[in-house]
Image (cartoon, rainbow, N blue to C red; front, side, top):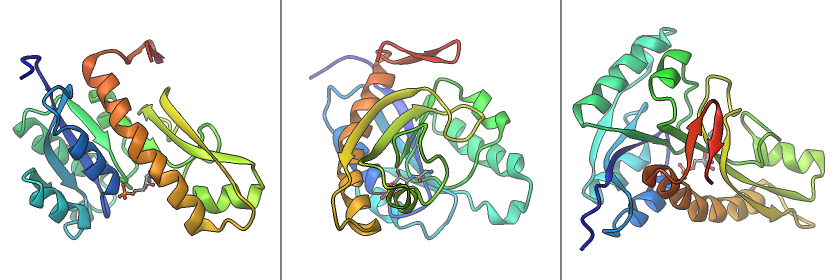
Length: 206
Ligand code: GAR
């Protein structure tokens, strides 16, 4: 059995949590450098919470709605959960809240996200529909360090897929999602082991 320290990690979700499941499964291996100790959602009915609980992972729900427009107050409540669980690394997996500079700065270099496009193309939402509309030949996904500017952080890993004749949003998103499940665990391992890190706003060692 490995004796290396595993970095206590939280996954933040808003929905079904298929990337979360991919991370939890990868982290079952004793030699995986991150340990998933918490899954937290901003919506109490996020489907991924039940999947996480079924996998034996602690869950928390911090509903953003009672906080209204005060994003930072919501994030302070979320941050309190992360602190309470001794979290050192945070992986966003379909977490659909824009984070304030307060939270991003606090977790700088220890906060990663997966985005369903080849960044810097198609930041924001509806990436598959916009890729089809633009007529690109290649699409894909990106794992990146989170910085205050939305979907603009340095890339850790990317995977490309072809856009095929006859593709619609469903077929294209399914092809991309398969790659998300492959690269997100790899990227988390790179960051948790220190092989990839954020230095002076640039991703080093990937
Ligand atoms: C994934 O495709 C992820 O890349 C995307 O949401 C989906 C969540 O699916 N994230 C974003 O769009 C972030 N802006 P999942 O809940 O099954 O992992």
